[in-house]
Image (cartoon, rainbow, N blue to C red; front, side, top):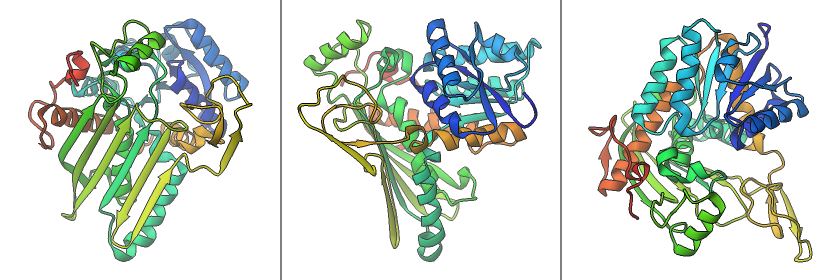
Length: 413
């Protein structure tokens, strides 16, 4: 593309990739040019969505290498499944090393990989060809989080002292695709799938604007995991019927609830606490993202289901099940919140705007693959704490080689 526009290709064509593509309607300096997926039918459908939304003249590609080689594509967004992360990056790097093409940036959806060893390999591969990398964490860019953080630091913290406690949660009724439910493919359960969001939200809120992410350092982590709903016989049967025989929570469950407490030390010596909770067993209107900050003389709270728009449908309105009101929607009648623009409310628009600008300018983004590695270190320490039933100093010994029991398929709730 020309110097003032970024041509973007997507690796992956599923739910997450489509959320990203929808957000490009609010990005003026980037175009979606291509989509690759091992499922060519899905790739074609997702490319058609981009054209329909007029966010780029996207077409399906036959391989990742072909996208790297296309001079119209300047950057790739990795949105494929966790178990394909390393092989996808290997193909990108091999294409660049072979001289097939060049890239101005590589962005990766959370989590960076399934464990620390894989995360470090992904980061090392990207570094080997000098790629500018971005770790995609949409919730940091949610408008309410951005504005709330600015205000509490500019007013509350400036006058009475920095915040000392932040809480964040992501909760819904469970993922869309079978691989998410399989610990061996996904790398764990809800902790690996969603706590990565909450970990970064609390760290972001506790970090002074303008200061580096490293200005607060994780010191100790305590965590707990459980299978509260989906390993119950009736629900395990229902899950297997919906997701296929490879998802059997009577034999190979993953956790559907996880919580962790992360103790940070600020560069000023102050102790800060982050509390994070995630759930695939939440029963409510749909996806609920929430956060809270407490400081000496102030507080902040955010809940995506406290929306300004609500609808009520009586029992006589018996429509088909869908997700037209809110992601992971659980009902079609009663009083229900509506998220009018989910890609914007959840942070996808401003996230992709930030990374597109950074790649175009050759600047280091707010989050890179190195940050994604540290997030994975925190998540794996949380799994280690849950397995041992004790608080862990960070980083604990043996972290690089650690694989959670859930990811091995040997965990017993």
